[in-house]
Length: 447
Image (cartoon, rainbow, N blue to C red):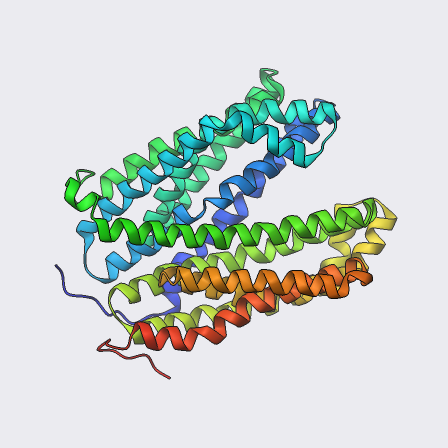
């Protein structure tokens, strides 16, 4: 075993990981824009609605299994910090096994899964038929897409964020090019958009495997005793379970927010959808910093470097606050113009402007929500993160219930309260977890 490393944490290290993650996040929405444009040019509202509905379903479905990327990133970073590069291959292969099992289960259960999901979505007959066509094809990409989560987490966990960015760009570019060709040039309709997603994930997996093989020091040959080490397997499964529950709670909040907004009427639903794009933009930057927190805190955790862990936390949160302030100012200055650009409805524009102050407020509490998520994942404090997320969900629902008479205003207050609760509860718990984790660390954290 190599001696643990205790490198000094710098701003350059933060942005070496956060920068590529931000760029990768910014490229992802292009897939939706290209798919919507390609299908939209067919002049078939049912197919356009179908791809929109199915895309939401897959976003939530695969988001539920984002623990594959997060836990792989954390365990790889911890192995790097502990000076155990020989553990990298075992982490990767374990991730592939879990991704393969989940992906196979999703394919096997596709019929009941589709029936239940589309019943809950409640779309028109034409939209549902189109969405089912997309669903039944794209579901075959599940093992590959989940395996790509593992590869991306594995690369970022080794601080190879540029390679992860390149792989993400490859997947997105192939998806966009294949969508245009299949939908427009070959007239494959919504099925073509689904096939494009499958082809992109397949190509991404092949490229990812080649990249992983080339940088792996030991190849993919892992002794069975190492691969199926009971202690490490049980720890991985426990962390994955807890992150999955945490993510499910997060999905509930945003689905609840959308559903309650829809009940307020079409104008409210449309205005909230416009404003959600603002939240998405701020999330791109904050999630990039969360990626940096996962890697740097994971590495410090593996090295038993309490001081490095505390310094990583401080840097990520300080830079997050800086980004949040800039984003909030930009939203305040240019929000009305952006709203006007995104919708032609005067009613929706007016209503969205009324609720713009909530979007301006959101990035600052978002810093602590996203930042501490990354810190907790890096340290694999998954059980605490799960429990605090469930508490935040309860606070969100209680706030909405107490303010439900105020309609959409109460809903937005509940959402901002949820951001505050997520970051606030984890922030309050953080000092105790830091002391507990690094109680025997030779490099104790600074106060």
